[in-house]
Image (cartoon, rainbow, N blue to C red):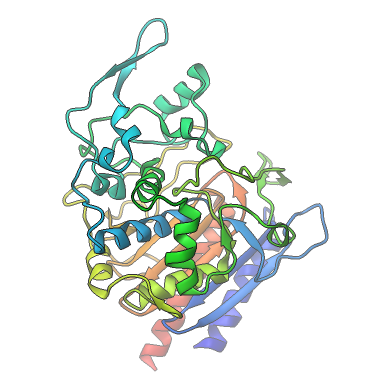
Length: 397
């Protein structure tokens, strides 16, 4: 299996960086419950420089940060310090100040009213709290354009103080919910989120290259975000999250290596056990992986700001649910990913999956905007499909 997988995966990575259009560079890995079984790197960290992409290249992880924040929340639930169904304002009072937006006045001022119920941490973990993103929601985009609502990439508290798009708990919409979960973790622990991660997740897992604040050593290995132009070409962007962020954004703020993320995925594959200590109880992992949305389903993501995201959906037409805090594909995916597996993505076209049934997980890392880049996303699906083809062949043999 490993020899066949390496051959097919290497070809996919090579094609991704040599085809026209292409990706600038990519790192991809697959792990079983014990160790990484495939790792590959191809292309360059930055197209206008000579440095090649390597397996220890550093990426802005964007929303793949969310699962780590959710893990910190679950730890506090285990310890009895956080009640998922208590008002979130008990732990982070500012969230209780937010109102629901019901459109705009003729002057352009937002029409606001009090929410019908309190936001809970459970709602935040499930993206039913009422929050969105300006690149996926036109109301937030208008608030940004006309009312100066700061972008989440400013890593500011002001960026979180947005109106709610609907009454808490009424539907699923992807947004800044997990950033608020980070604020709740800080409110309970009295520590910055990065310190909580280091002490309670990164150290037990041996994740030494994951941080909210880049070191010089990490910056020297940084893969640069590229913009996809209308003709398919790529332009390097001088984009970097704030070096000393006001808020450690639990929804998108981490930098790290794919190898570090493999250690995190292995923890989820191993019922919460890490290389240097337990991170979650086995019963917590089994609870968290289930669909917690009930009959609600997650919806496609409309690309409202073309420079940041295309229209996006995993496995179009297939029903998908949400756990604490991953997407769950309710049916077997076209790639071979089994029903009930976990996964998600990051804005700059990073994608991962966690298959607890078979004991494998994978990560595909590029740095391209907008999201749902056809070149990177299709190559990622080929990468995942190649793995499951190899797994099927091994099982038949």
